[in-house]
Image (cartoon, rainbow, N blue to C red; front, side, top):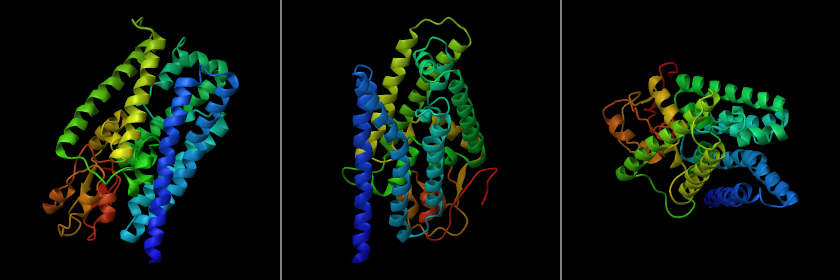
Length: 353
């Protein structure tokens, strides 16, 4: 009885934390992006302070506490090696991006520079003289801070892309991503927030694949636009308008869409069409990312399929001892932890078990 009570309490606490994280995202993001610029100065300062606290300190606390609760809930069901490593990676990444980085660089919006192209174009906009971001950043932070955050961004990009070649998509999507990846792992046992646990069917996966390539080319368009601005090409279009369209795209098709997927569907919904996820998936494929299914004999229990948050049919491959090679695989390793016969292993060409 005590074990059941503990499980129920941990799951309840985890769900409350997820609900709080989502509610605050809607409220504070709305105030920060839609109201702060028109608000009185003292109100705007309060909104921005609350938003920065939410994005930095509170997020880090949620990753630490939520990760601990998730491990307590899952360790009773078998091995948790892959999941534990995921959660440790996210917590360390949060300490760098949300705690120590902002403190050392004296810049609370550093997380904008923690995701490489084509997910965000903030670093490119920062370099374009006359862009809204360039003007406001220089006015608030100065040239020295500009150089510092750009160096940070270059370092993050090198770490993400080099690590992905070595470790596959797992490196970014299940270890470093502080947008949707960390939420998907930290709160994995309690998705969706409302309703019963769901997985994407074949029709929905096909729709997600259409969205993947659509948003990927949209992201490439914006990146190309800002790169050509940097190259000195006189392109038609208002810089402020393009920047505002990008903010709109981020708010509605990235942030709000991800939040709604967490509420009604699954934590990994956004991962199907994330532009950076598409890049890391292609890099992972080039680096030989796969799940080996022949370490022992598969007993066809189906636990791997039940554990996969991306609805990949791992069992069909395991029955025939074929490797799982799928662009949707985020390398979370839930299938590996769940296999009672230890049949599965996550490998790349440069990183084998």
